[in-house]
Length: 101
Image 1 (cartoon, helix red, strand yellow):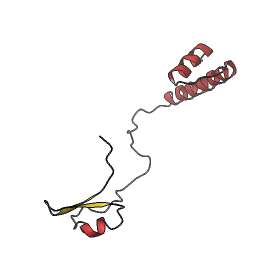
Image 2: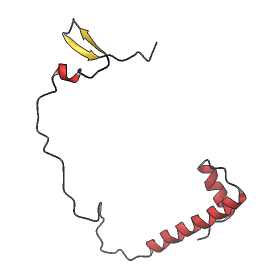
Image 3: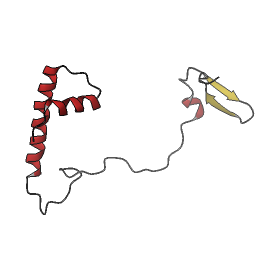
Image 4: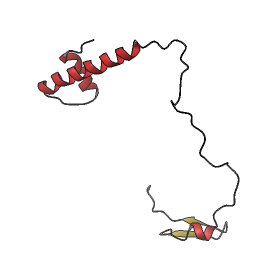
């Protein structure tokens, strides 16, 4: 399939690209090459081939999700540039500047 300059101009417009006539001509050729390659891939016989999520065997590399204790409050707030104590709840919080009025 061949992409002409007007189709390339339409694609460039959708991509919000401002291209010169020379660049549009080059883009039309490149898009045509991509579409020809995808068409070539579509001609490969894939009957009986199972769909894959990954071509290599993979395994889970994460550790088991076992519950562990929380980070102590003093250690969590140790490097905070600002923190606030709340006497009503007995807790402490990270202090951040207000972003809304």
